[in-house]
Structure formats: C-alpha cells, structure tokens
Amino acid sequence: LRALTSNDINSSRSSSTLRSVKAITSSDDEEWITPSNAAFRILQRLVTGKGVRTAQQMALDERDFNMVLHAYAALSQNQMHSAHRVMALQERTTHAPPLSAVAYSILLKAYGRWQDIKNVEMSILHAQRNSVVPD
Image (cartoon, rainbow, N blue to C red; front, side, top):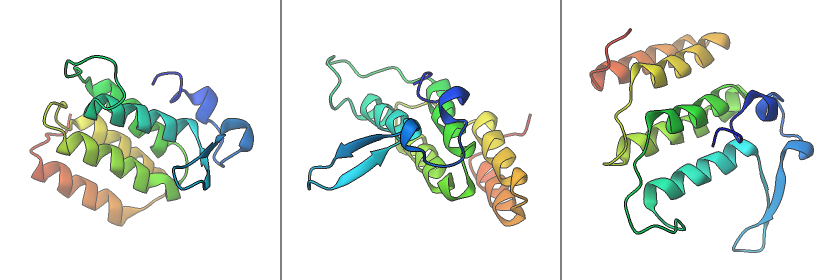
C-alpha cells in the first residue's frame, strides 16, 4: 500500500497512462487502474479476506486506510468520491479501527485546498456525529 500511495506515483493530478495499468474487467470491458485504485482494491481484499492466503482475519491498521485516503484526497476534487469510499469501508468494517481525527484532517485539508466550504462543514458535522474530537 505504501508504494501505491506514495507522492512519487500519485503526484500527477491527471490520469496518465504512464501511471495507470489497463485491465480487463469480468465483462471484457477495458478499465484503467490507477495506483490509488489498486491500493483501494488491496485494502478491500485485506478487509474482506477474499484473495488473501491466510485463514485468519487480518489485523488492520489505521495507517493503511489513511494512506489510501490521502492518495485520493491529493489527486483532484473529482476523486473525492473515492476518498469517501475509503472512509465508508473503514466505518462499515467491524474489525477496522474507528475513524480518527487524522482521517478527517485529510478530508478537511483537501476540501480547504479547493475552498469547498459546504463539504468542510459536512465533514466537521460527520466527525462530531462519530464523536471525533479535534486535536
């Protein structure tokens, strides 16, 4: 996950073919997989256990979620739906660590960079509903 979410790989604000891999989906459609999307898919597999060679439930670390969240938030404003998918995955997974002030800080920084006041306020309300105390 660290390699796929690094700034060196994700520094481009556009989806470049040099930073993407073309994949064939199950319906034989072509799809571009960016490093951020690959990291999210790995995180999903760690959460669900599908495709992982161990029978034990994986111990998940908050840093794993935050690295993928940060990779999406650092891209462009139209990638924020993917950042919210990461947060939803963490929130809905019973054995994942709870959302923390770090996750919300990543969101607030991204929305602040784009001067998106509406989503800044929504993120703060969401954090308060989850009993996250600002640091």
